[in-house]
Image (cartoon, rainbow, N blue to C red; front, side):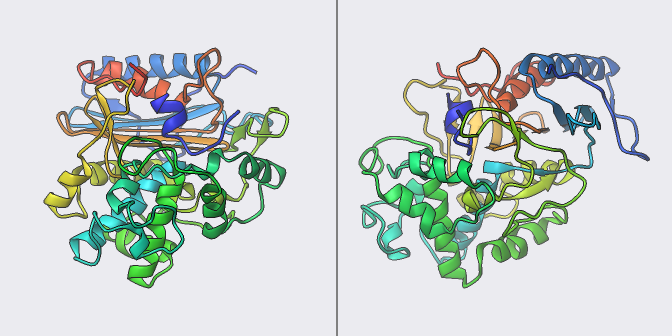
Length: 384
């Protein structure tokens, strides 16, 4: 599925309950229409129970609504509740930051979207034909390293080990291309790793430093970070996954996210993701022409025609943004320009919805919530 297997990062294989909470000193959640708050409480509680997600943090903001609540448990062992001020591993949301960095270099005339990746990174199969645009729009044809069986075994055998970008590319380059460059679509973390190497070569800065100086600081995203190890600021929820050798559930909270690097290693908060969702969807850091190119989407054959993927971003029934998944956590951060609405969902599991064909729980929350707040624009990333 576009939502659960294509747009997520992780190589995936007691009942939950809802308990709205907020940290001390927080103002109550409110909407101008009090009935909207009640509806959101109900659909989120129901979705939490139906998906089996331990805990969720949800934010909805717009001209007529401000809703920020936490549901369920952050720690199944202690029963500690989720909180709206938690830090969170955001997985493939990281791609939106990395691609924004590349597009900034485009605006500065330092790179071109139709430049071949071989001009910047040697040794890429078909590197003289694959362009930066194709990498950002998942049309390069390069194999997704996180689908490599040896990589998956290496990750679950020692999830605390660091991976280098070169190691990740090695898993990918051992496979033939999935299709000729530009002639298909396949969501591949390999693409974003290569784009990050372009940033490092052209800017002369390590990726984490570039993102900090050129993306996070200009937007005041003080609680968003790009870790270079398994550092995870407090407070945060425990993250639950079945990405294990035997498929049993385990806690992945402190696993090293270096295997995701430019495609999935970043950490953020509900409030920062609110700012970022709008900024990335409206092109705050980019020239209008470049943002327009970013939003030119392709729809993979067999998928809902209302969903398309652009340059490190998707448009799902008018909701623009990205989702993220890695062992233990899922995220959804999207913005609906037509209604000036922002939606952020943070979950402390990446386990698929029970009884589904691998549906990502973040997508289930996105659909349920938008049925309330934008019934004419219901978030949908499912196949046609």
